[in-house]
Image (cartoon, rainbow, N blue to C red):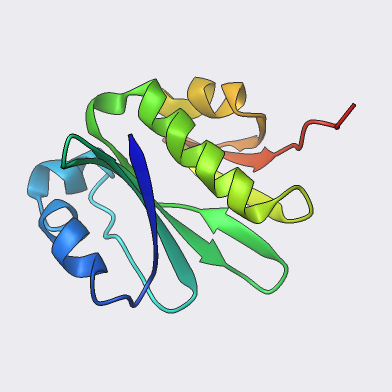
Length: 134
């Protein structure tokens, strides 16, 4: 699986994710919440055999990064793992990383060192806890 990283206003972004973010079935998976982008976003796109199987838009705030709306085809844990590994590798351990995670994905995020800060009805607010180096 290849993970591509694009700036939120990169001209290559819309042709790749546009058909997905406009798909009513995918919007329903996202609780009918629209996907957003701007120059404050980095998009991590998972591609397997030429097909986009997931993406995570990562928003940069003043002192932190945040994952909010994302898509994982078939809710596959290996796609979540690959995307999160790339995001974490790129950010390093010095950056604060939070995520608003669908309930169905919380265990996969926990496996990638996120912990729940707050449980909401449809989501968990989670924070990445870096693993100490030995």
